[in-house]
Amino acid sequence: MEIKKGIAVSPGISIAKSLIIDSEDYRIPRREIKPSQRLRETQRIRNAFRDAIEELTQLEAQQNQAEGGKIKDIFAVHLRFLRDRSLRKKITDLIHLELVTAEYAVSTVLREIAAHFSSVKDSYISERAADIYDIERRLLRQLLGKRREEVENLSEELVIIARELSPTQTASFDKKFVKGIATDAGGRTSHTAIVARSLGIPAVVALEDLTEIVHGGDTVIIDGNRGIVIVNPDDGTIRQYEKYSHEFAELEHKLDAIREKPAVTRDGTKITVLGNIEFPDEAELIVQKGGEGIGLYRTEFLYLSSPTEPTEQQHYEAYAETVRVLQNKPVVIRTFDLGADKHTQSKRFAPEPNPFLGLRSIRFCLQNLMMFKTQLHAILRASLLGNVKIMFPLITNHQELMQAKMILRDVMEDLDDESIPYNRNIEVGIMIETPSAALTASTLARDAAFFSIGTNDLIQYTLAVDRGNELVSTLYSATDPAVLRLIRTVIQDAHKAQIGVGVCGEMASEPDYVMLLLGLGVRTISITPPMIPEIKQIIRSVTIEDCNDVARKVLSMNSERQISNFLRNAARKILPEAF
Ligand code: PEP
Ligand code: MG
Image (cartoon, rainbow, N blue to C red; front, top):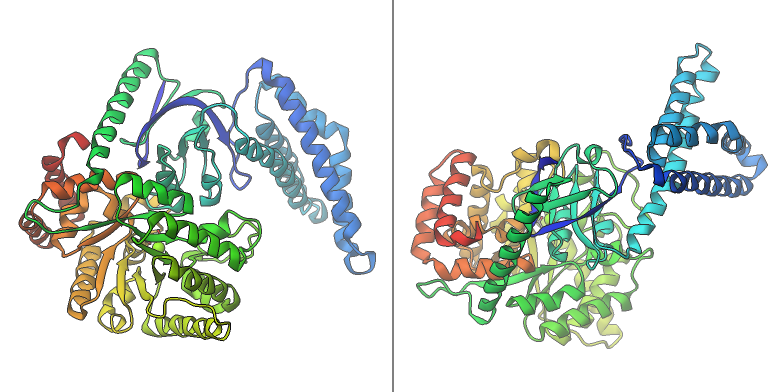
C-alpha cells in the first residue's frame, strides 16, 4: 500500500481498478505486467508497427518527388527502420523477459539505439538520433492513441491515472465508468480540474510521480476530499474508506434537502447563487441543486468537443437548450475563451511560447472575427428565448471592450438586415481576470453592464503563477493580500458605478471563502453546481455583520498563510460537518 498526497480538486471518494494513460510528451515510466498479459502487449506492438508503417507509407506517397524529395527520403528511411524485424524482436523480447508494458519497451529500446547513434563521432550518423526519436514518438502515438480510444469505450468502472489530461479528454469521459481521476500534473483551477468537478468525478491532481508508482489494474482509492490517493490499499483501509464514502454520500443527500430554500443570510440579505457550466446538459443539475441561474457558461467547450468548428445553428441549439432548461432564470453566456490550455481538437493554434500570455480569449476573438461573429449571431438569436446575457472574457483594457462591443453592434445590424428578432437591450458584461482590468475597473464600468470576477485567472496573473503547473501550486492562492486588494477594488468600483458584480472563479465555490466574499460586498456568486447546496447552507448560517467582521480582519492581515488559517477556522465553526 502506498499513500500519495496531492491537491483535492473534485470531491468524493472512489475505489476501483486503475487505467493508466501515458503521454508521448513525457518519459514513459517502467511499469510491470503480469505474465498472462505478455501476449496482449506483443499484439499491441504488432498493431502499432502495422499502423505506423501504413501511416508512413501514405505520407511518403503524398510527397511529390520534385518538391518533397528530401522529405520522401526521410520517410523512406523511417519505413526501412520500422520494417526491420530485429527491431521488433528486441522490443518484444524486452516485454517477455522483463515483463514490462509495450510503451515502456518501445521507449527503452528506441532510446538505447538513439543514444548509441548520438555517441558516434561521425556527424551524419549522430544526427540520425533525431530520426529514432521521431520513430519512437510515432509508435507511442499509435499505442497511446488506441488506449485513449479504449477509454472512450469503457465497459467497467475504473479510475484514470495520467501524467496530465486535457480539458477535452476529461470532458469526453463516460461518467458511468470513470469513477475517479488522479494526475501527476495540474492545479486546483486548471480546466481539467474544473471539468472533473462539473462532471462530479472525484479527482486529485499534482501527485508528481503517481504514474511511476501505479500499474494498470492496481486497486486505487481516490479521496477527492482530502487530496489523497492510495495505491493497493489493504483490506482495513478499503473498509474504512467504504464507510467514509457512505457517510459523505449521506451528508450530500442531507444538503440537497436545502435546495428549495433561498440563499438568505440569517439577518435577511439575499445572495444570488448561480452555477457554472461547460455543456448544456449540465444546466439541469443547476436547477436540481437549487441554483438560480447560470453565471458562467464556458462556451469554448463547444469547440473542444467537436472535431470541426461549430456552425451557427449548433451554437444556437446549445444555447436554446440551456435557456429552455433555465426558463426565465438568467443565463450568462461567456463568448468563447479558447487558447492557453484550451485548444480545439484540430490544434488550429500554432504553439506559442507563453500561451497564457498569448493569443487567448477575447484577443483571439478580435483577430478571428468570422468565428466571433458566428457565435454572437447565435447568442443574439437565442436571446429572445429567456434571460440571456453576454459576457466577454479576459478584457485587459477599455479599448478591447469597445472593440468587442462594436463587433456585437455589427452583428446586431446584420440581424436587423436579415429581419431576425433579438433582444436589443441584452446586458453585456465582462470578466475581470487581470490586474489591469481590476485596476481600471472604474473606467470599464462605464461600458459594462456587470462584472464577474474570474479569480482563477486573476490569481494567476496577479501572482505570476501558472494555474495548471503543479511545481508552483503552493504559490497559487486566493488569499494572497494582493489578490484580495484587487478584488476589493473591483467590488468598490462596481458599487460606485452601480453595476452588478459577482465572482465566478473557483474561489466562490470554496466553503472557506464565502464569508470573506460576502464581507467584501459580493452579493452574486456563480459556482460549480455540485457545491451549490453546501455554499447555500453556509450563507444561511451567517450574518452579514459576521462576514463584514471577517473581511475587516482579513484585510488587516499581511500574510497569505495567516489569512487562510483564519478563514478555515471561521468556516469550520459555521459548518463543521463539511470538514
Ligand atoms: C476564471 O478565470 O476565474 C474563470 C472563471 O474563467 P476560466 O476558469 O474558464 O478561465
Ligand atoms: Mg478565466
